[in-house]
Image (cartoon, rainbow, N blue to C red):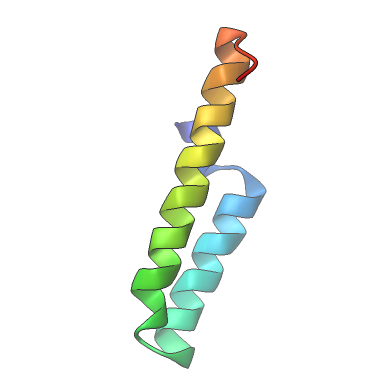
Length: 56
């Protein structure tokens, strides 16, 4: 899970979500966090599949 969290795209997306929630519109923060969580768990699944040798 740590490898997925430190993926550069996940970190950039999390920073963008926080900044958008703080400066643009408060309603963007929950939507952005939901999208970030989807992206994070997708990346986590990819990392797990690579480590286990699975191709799906």
